[in-house]
Amino acid sequence: MDECGQCKAVAQWEAGETNGMVVARTSTGFVTLLSTQYYPGHTVFVSRQHGPEVFDLGDKQEAHLREMGGVSEAVCRAFKPRKLNTAALGNQSPHLHWSLIPRYEDDPQPLKSPWEDPAFWEALYSGVREPREVEAERFNRLLEELHAVGVPLEQEWAP
Image (cartoon, rainbow, N blue to C red; front, top):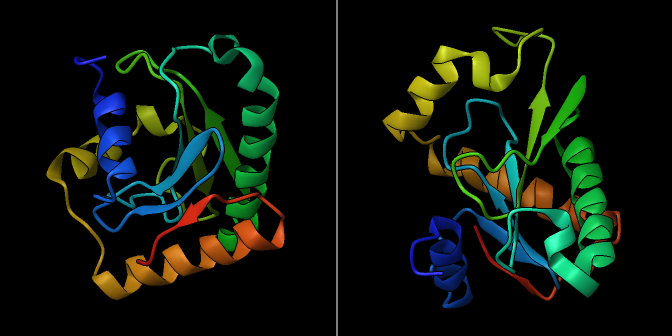
């Protein structure tokens, strides 16, 4: 899909161009930290296969859901949120990807969806990133927990 931004990203990641935020590849997806960490630990699990819905994955559906569950658990263990918001919306990008958003006691909008928080969008569009050592620490914590919960990883990257 030439016009799919997620497919373009997957092709870049397969070629090793990860921008320091792709943690690992599983059999069905890529575990990435969102480059703007407005919600510390915000992880995105992107399907390797194009399609807007889980059922579009065909015979990879069960494996993808199992891996996504493991990634979710790893995010919770790594970042210890009070709650993990999980969403596969795809309204802007019709390529299956799961937003795994840790929510904390000190969230600025604790009872609202992240998408309802204007400051989240402002941070996202600004492209502001954490200092490299903070990114690396989160990256390593998530990778450690992916191993601890037994998510089968085909490839890992360094922060």
